[in-house]
Image (cartoon, rainbow, N blue to C red; front, top):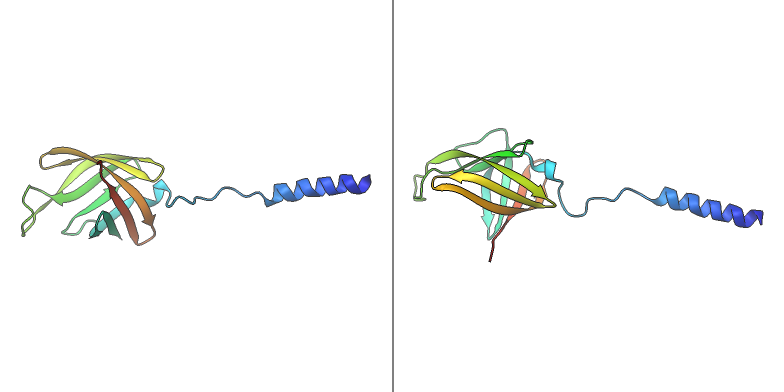
Length: 132
């Protein structure tokens, strides 16, 4: 009888010790992508940005921890070189791995969604989500 009780307590103890906190298997955590991202490289609907301390003379985006953002993009409708850029204020929210953006542009305000694919110390990878 003592052996049976010992086995039960040992089993319960091992079960409790073997439990670990659930790991994030769905990609980067939302707070990991805050910062300045420049030099977008496009491949179909996927975009890879480089981390930077500040904007350069090209397009980019800054995600702030307070859910505000600044997007540097074309300042007008014409994309023919030389392209001039302007900074537009906006906001974002995160639901799982989806970043919902609302930001100004030369013609008003636009809203779009990005899927957060990967982020590390140097690169941010997102995928544009199109409404079909």
